[in-house]
Length: 202
Ligand SMILES: Nc1nc2c(c(=O)[nH]1)N[C@H]1C(S)=C(S)[C@@H](COP(=O)(O)O)O[C@H]1N2
Ligand SMILES: [Mo]
Image 1 (cartoon, rainbow, N blue to C red):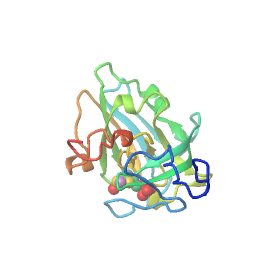
Image 2: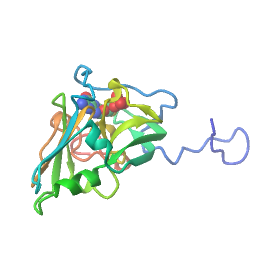
Image 3: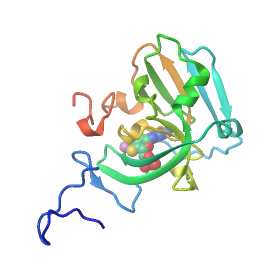
């Protein structure tokens, strides 16, 4: 492991600058966390819909979303349960591309991310736009496993990982904030790992 040292052997290792406060490096481990049973969603059944405050409600099926321009995220992820993973590579499509097709109405400020299982999580639209969020189906060159949200999940890596809805089915645009599953159960509305926004009130 490439430890960053201050100089001499035996000196205290510096904290990895990629690690937000209160997090540890899970290294080769990728913990699996979800509240529902892992669904078996075949790619022939999977769809993604942008709805709510949009000019056009748009739904893509598996082939249609793959026909959109690809976008890659290479970087780190951070779970509120304190594990982080460095240097992950996810491939899919940028949320910008999906929103562009639906055309958010001027009043749209927030979104609810929806899952085929009923899981929900809320996000300000500003956290989903500007190259910060993806719908992804490959990780490190392999199809995303069902336990990690396959066939496709949301990826919002600058926020804690509960915002990255597995088995994602769409986004509902709204003119107000509304809490999703974990937010109603005490997690922070935004969840910035660098500000340690873990719980309501942080
Ligand atoms: N549908 C769904 N998505 C979910 C969750 C969940 O319970 N259901 N848990 C979230 C939480 S709390 C985390 S940390 C990550 C875990 O993703 P992983 O199992 O791929 O590590 O998924 C997020 N997305
Ligand atoms: Mo989590």
